[in-house]
Amino acid sequence: MVVRRFMPSPTRRAVLSYARCQRMGRGVGAGPRGSGDGGRSSRMDRREAADMARDWSAALVDCGGVPTALPSAHRLTEWLVDLEAAMSAEPFDPSPAYRVGVEMVRWKLTDPALMTPSATVLASLLERSQRPDRTQRFGALLGELGRGYSAELLKVHADSQEIADQRFRVVFDNAAVAIALYDSNGITLEANPTTARMVGMKPEEVPGVAGLDLMHPEDRDKLQQVVVDLYQRRHGTVHFEGRFCRPDGTVCWGAWTMTLVRGAGGRDLRLLAVGEDITERRAMEQKLWWQARHDPLTGLPNRHCLLEQLEAIVATAGPADHIGLCFLDLDEFKLINDRYGHRAGDSVLAEVGRRLDAKMTSPSVTVTRIGGDEFVALLAPPCDEETAHAAAETMLATLREPVPVGPTDLLAMSASIGAVVAPVAGANAEKLLNDADVGLYRAKAAGRGTWVLHRDENGRAAE
Image (cartoon, rainbow, N blue to C red; front, side, top):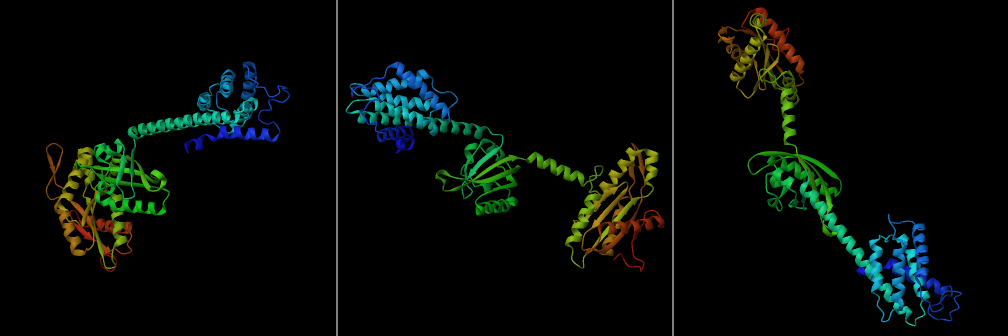
């Protein structure tokens, strides 16, 4: 069956050419037209073979599909001489045709377009022979040529496949990216060393492990849904970022591109995943996220973070929920900067932030620094005037102890606080801050170290 798959081109073309000669009246044994040899054998000499070889070479060029380098005219001549000699040899030995078939493949004469001129040349050998057993001999020669052609073509294909496999293995084993193959049940069939390093295992330990078992528990459902959706579509590519739990307890972030490929025989679908370790990138993103939402001097959440939290509370609050804000401003802080310098002023702000954060320990309270000497405590629902009162008193109490300033000085500090308690549903974050700021100015007008709950013109807490 293998021979029939690869052999037919030169053999079948030769047979068809011979058949055309028969239809034209140039029967076997007639000899070349005009030879007048009366049926005697006409042996090919080297000069005649060389002329035929040049014609063969020119025909190969004319038909297109020519390899980079054609066999030389001398090489083609040798082939023709060997084949013609084999037709007449006693005892008959068709092995030269096998060698010619091998040589044709080695010279890359495998394009179907090259077979027609080659087949015409082969058929001419049959026309020249006057032997009674010429048909049998010609068939045997064609068979051997086809065997050599097919055997060498199979070898070339096998060598090419082996080279391709070796190249793939080199790429697979040395790729800087992780590459893994999973069966339809999510079991690892194969994984390269980079994958093993990502998940903190030895390369030989990864095959046989379920991919989901390596995932962080919080990311497993998400990954499973992504893979299920991909298998349901049976085509396409998906992207996934998730965490792996390594055996040593550390966590690795991976970014994966996944697609489906056919397994051996083209039956089963396999999941091919290509990924990279993005732990450092994620850490940097987290760091940048934190820096964008925290004050670098005190480490407290900043105005941006406060507004985000307010908006999140407003978006999820019930109709009866209330929220509170306590807006603190240090009294006469400018004098500290003027007398001791900005470095000392920063030291005071850092100490005030530390004290506020240490005292306001309720999970429902978030202390923020929104700029300068201004600090805001966010009181999450449920909140009422009593809650705001307690929070404001606690904040003022943190400043009753003198604050160190400079190498030896202790400075008595005070602050003013404006507070607001308002319904959350439909509230505007900036308006809530503005109402608390109004209360702050009233507190400053009332004197140092006081707090004021902002009320509307009817004397009610802000609504």
